[in-house]
Length: 250
Image (cartoon, rainbow, N blue to C red; front, side, top):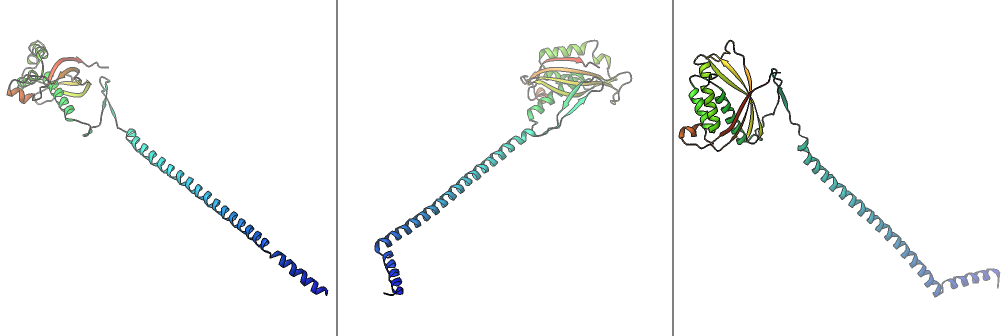
């Protein structure tokens, strides 16, 4: 055999040997294993990405809930930071300082307004004087005071210091309520000024305004016996203790 024929025969033998059934089966098995490995790798990559996406989603949801809760908390605290204006009033004569709260229709109740009204009217009638209306003033005090307070008032009006004797028809005693402070639910402290005036309410010559502090305790248990008393005091306002002192001038 020539050399070329020997080479051809040798090559054919190798090809035939490689293509025998066992070798084909082994090659197929290797390819299958490689395919499975590639598939498993791809699956692992996908699962890893899905886990990462799930984790990031949970983090985003948690952050969203935290932001909502923080917003609600800040909103809830907002009323606590409301700035309420406050003014302090200083009496130039006595140096007394009191706080003036801004009027708020929402916080002002009918009960508090009614109590302030009766307290102020009692002071004006108990401490004021005018010849032509003194009987009406006396009727108001009688309709809004208990027996002890009324007895003290009558004793004052009949004393030598009574405005009936001191002022008679010629002068008036006006009362200006400067402020009402509640020490508790049934006790009020009232600062007021007395002014002796002419009948036309001009300040009388020789009389200086005087400042006073009244402390009164009250309830709403006054027994109303007549229609006249009902018109004056329909709610049964009743002063059970009354004291008045001159305000100290500093």
